Amino acid sequence: MLLTDHNTTLEDGYSVATAVMNRASRVVRCLKSWLEWEQCKEIVVIDWSSRFLVQNVIKNRGINDDRVKIIRKHNQKFFSRSKAWNLAIENCSREKILRIDIDYVLKDQEILNSVVSPVDSNRGFVSVRKNANLKGFCGFRQKDFLGVLGYNEDLEGWGYEDEDFYNRLVKNGIPQFHIDSPKDFLFHIPHSKKMSVVNHKCKNRKKTLKENIQKAGGNIPPWLNGFDK
Image 1: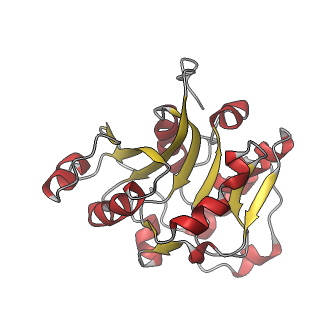
Image 2: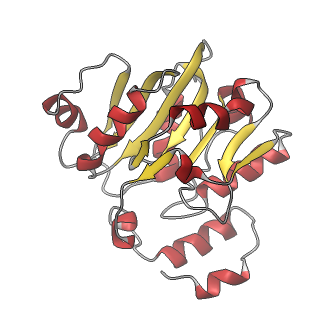
């Protein structure tokens, strides 16, 4: 999971952590929206061996902001969500973290500020309710992330990384605050189901979701039998 020499000198404010593999067209729109958020002190982007260097993409599109930190992970054939997210958060310098998918555009700062208030006041972490869309968004403190050793890197492919992370936070005594309407402050750049797994070794979402639930020691939910792969 996490490296033992993780940065322990953290500054106040928010780091926005994300990762991308071969979705360069979405990076610019995403970054521009989050750079406008007044509480954003830095954005850490893991470029997971994208065909086109993310650093070059944003430079060519006019993003020249010292708050943006691009870290290139070389020679990776397939995308690993847990490993990429851990790497991003390991390189964040702020004590408060927002972990977002690369195709999430911020559209309302005022609502976001209200949503993350439990993180601001050190009362717990925030995540999107299970039956809502846009589940690739969450907010937490670095110390709480480290307390559960981050995302489980044994979970490969698509699915259950976030749920496993949240479950371990709760078991570690960190209160969970649910977000019921993430569409109030986020816009999801549309994409096909195929795109969500195109960079993964296994393209069958149902198969990898089931395997990851089992690896994490969870119970297979009845609805998974009818899940559209």
